[in-house]
Image (cartoon, rainbow, N blue to C red):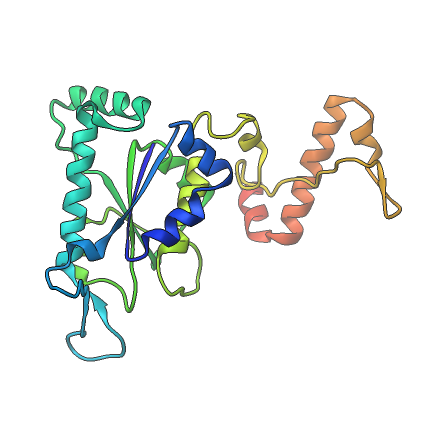
Length: 257
């Protein structure tokens, strides 16, 4: 899977993602991540990408043209990748198959704008987006981005919560992390993602490791019993209990299914 992050701060994005599980997945060619600097597509000598807001108001707004030119360059690169020149071989093969089925390579990529005005990001959304071969993430700054270019290129508006950040880079990194771990091969244990919080609508059950007793707290006996059916029953009961206590909204939704 290929992530293309349109940003004013590419170093921030790449430094944050080029480590741990995501970094190893990049090294293995399971995913690719590129951060494209929107300033490179500014049409003035100072690489200025913002201007005053029509109608007045505090702050500045990112202009439409640099964002659009950046998007065009990214889309051009994606189309070249779909013709067999990509860095992630499997992703390219899937894209080539898709283009053959569609009869052309002109299908537009999915473009996610990170904004507090978008739908709240969930595990279900991560699962959906993990099926894309290429995903473009657009990071805003200042007071946002000129609405006209958003209408032109954005397919999904996504928020990571009901609060405002200084820019879209941190939300973009969160999306890349959450989506990447659902790509086959990224996690060492492919089964682990199936039993985590939100995967089945519940929070994850409590877990324990060695030593068996720590600060006078003992590992629950059922986990030491070796009885797999009883262990699974206990875990499900604890997941229900924890969800009811900490996220009653999720619990009610789960019980209504």
